[in-house]
Length: 215
Image (cartoon, rainbow, N blue to C red; front, side, top):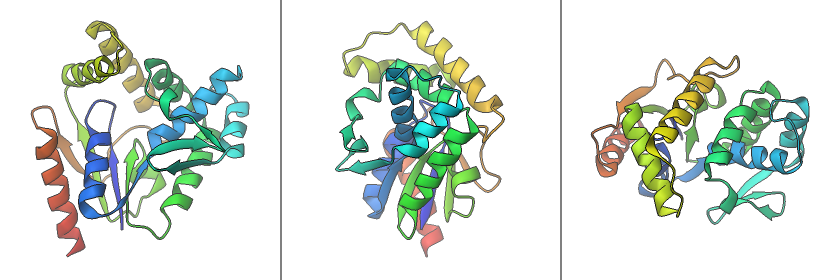
C-alpha cells in the first residue's frame, strides 16, 4: 500500500510521515530530499537550476536512501540538505519539467511493490495518483515560519522570523504557480490543518485513516 502526504513546508509532514511509517511498519520516502540533492549538486557545479542541464543531472545520478542517509551515487549528501539555501535551490529546480519527470520516475521505482509512506508536494496528484490513502497537510503561514525557525535554531542557525516568513511565502508562490505539478491537494486527499495540533495528534489521525483503509 502506498500512502502519500503532501503539503507546503512547515506543516509537519516530514515528521508525520516518518512516524506514520514506523507505526505502520512501512518504509518511508522523503522526496523533498531528492530535489534538494539534485539542487545542491547543480549549485556546486554552477548549473542553472531551471535548465535542461539540471534535468540531465537528475537523470544521470540515481538517488538512494540507506539507513536514513541520502546518497547521490556513492556520495552522502545528507548533511547538506536542510539549509535555507538548499530549500530555495530545490524550489527552483523543481520548476523544471525534466527534473520532476526524472525524480518521479525514480520515486515510482523505489515504491514499486512496497508498503511505503511517500512525502512531498505532488505525491498524491502526480507520482502516485492511485495511492491507497492520500493526505494534504496545511498550517497557518505564521505557525509554519515559527516551526522552521525552531528547526534551524536546533541546528545552530539563527534566521529572523520575518525573513523566514518572506522566504516561505515566495516558495509557496513558486510551488503553487509552477506549470508542472503545482502544489495542490489531490481531489481524493484528506486535508488536515495542523496549526493547533501536536505532532502526536496529527499522527493519531493519519494512522486512524490509514488503518480504516487497510481493513
